Image (tube, rainbow, N blue to C red; front, top):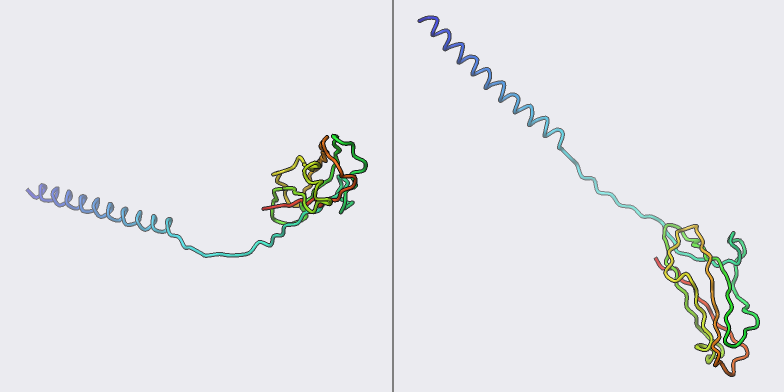
Length: 158
């Protein structure tokens, strides 16, 4: 009978030890999980200096800036092309290119004479350039225009 009591005590002692170990393992796991999953938020802010700027050049190395184009003698109903190089001389902003004309002199030249280009909507990154072909077209029905002036504006928009 003494042996049965000792066996029961031993079984209770083993069961208690196993339960204690399981509780200890769960507590250690929760402590370890909490240590692994802890986090801290840190707010930050700052400013990136950027600028938008374009320059137009007559050469591919972008060393000869131009401020005017002489189209020369035009044939009625003909066209003539001129290649220019547009460079994004700004920093931190890619630019989408567009081109418009204004200040036609005489005003009646606007329509019979048109200027288009092949880079509308082209994006250029800072420090890069692109060759652009400007095309001047004269309508075959043009009359009373012997000389003209027009302002070409090339715009870069972020």
